[in-house]
Length: 246
Ligand code: OAD
Image (tube, rainbow, N blue to C red; front, side):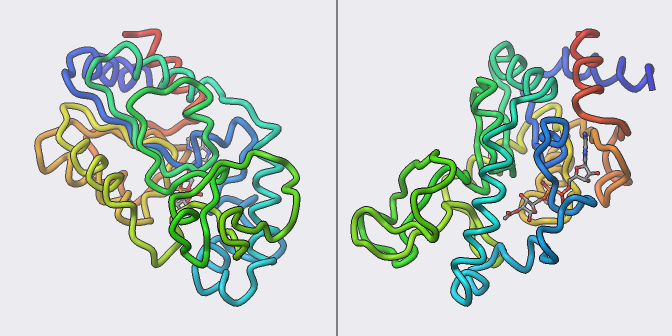
């Protein structure tokens, strides 16, 4: 383990361009439930049963109850040591880019620079009916929300969480930023099960372009076999240990 941490630190130290991709595992130590872990089920639903336009169309109240539950949980969570190390690197390395799948905004709260939130934020809402003003979205951090399901303040229609659901395309500029970030010297994928595309493809794109690729995760994932270095452990433990070797 120590050798791996040393190697990773050396690679990061020598990198001109560092890209970090994060998933729910980075927020696990903050108390945010992951999607596919043991705590991933809400009532008896999986994320794939709720985080779709079809599920919302069928039962907006049920989907909003799930998001209201996640918002309440996350409101009581703070960034952990993993968020803090990533934020510090984003401030220190001039060409460090952070791409996150997380919608909890804990990277934002930790002060991360150059951050692309490819799945949006659960603290932002947009108009489900797609009215011109509401489509741009708005921020609402109230917990609990004033009404469930919430309404669009512009047209009075139904509001939705401004997150990317299964079957929906990423916002063009976010996808572009994520793809551009694969042109780097070191690509770190941290705390993601590496099965949801296009995020899961980024590490492979980076490797094809010559980056040194490394994964930090509690367990093996589909990416583990292809990255140059796989470190098994909690991100909140591993990242501070790498940071102290830099
Ligand atoms: P998952 O819940 O699929 O995976 C979390 C990963 O984090 C797993 O591989 C765990 O082994 C790992 N993990 C858990 N605790 C950890 C820790 N302390 N340190 C390091 N790793 C840890 O979450 P994501 O990969 O983020 O999409 O899921 C991808 C997307 O699927 C999410 O953004 C969400 C979801 O459905 C949308 O909502 C569109």
